[in-house]
Amino acid sequence: MIDTIKYSLLGFLVLIFQWMLGDVFSIYGLTPSFLVIFIIYVGLTHSQLHAIWLGFFLGFIIDALTGTHLVGISGLALSVVGYFAGIFHGRITRVPIIMQYLLYTGFLAIFFVITVMITFQDSQWAIGNVVFLILLPKTIYTLGLLSGIFILLRVGAE
Image 1 (cartoon, rainbow, N blue to C red):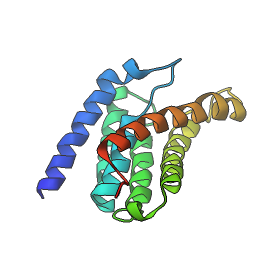
Image 2 (cartoon, rainbow, N blue to C red):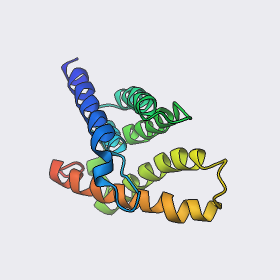
Image 3 (tube, rainbow, N blue to C red):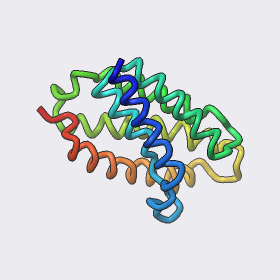
Image 4 (tube, one colour):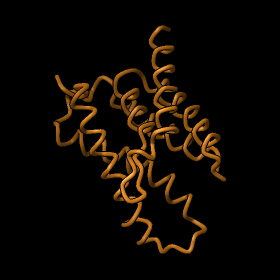
């Protein structure tokens, strides 16, 4: 119960950080998602169910705060990422390090495919432009931050 409260409060701090200071980390208009890094961390270290619910609620709140026209997409995407990250809860240390980072890349790609592709579905952008100018750079940028954070927190290390 204490872990649930601790991770929920930490999640709200990450949400506030993302909402208020996310643009500080913007590079050429690409902003990383600290919420998805947090949900991956919760899924790998705490529990799958907690990551799913926390991802849904935090995603819904960030969509409401940012005033997007597709409220709930981030909640859906974070819940899916929490589900997949939770599959490896307690087993991530048995996976070779290169596979760990491929899994992290896959988790981030799932999140950004859901959020970016749905957001740009009615735009005049070609699918190739969306993938190569937004989807891949956001995934790589967030993966770099995730890698640094996970190395500092020793996630996946034995």
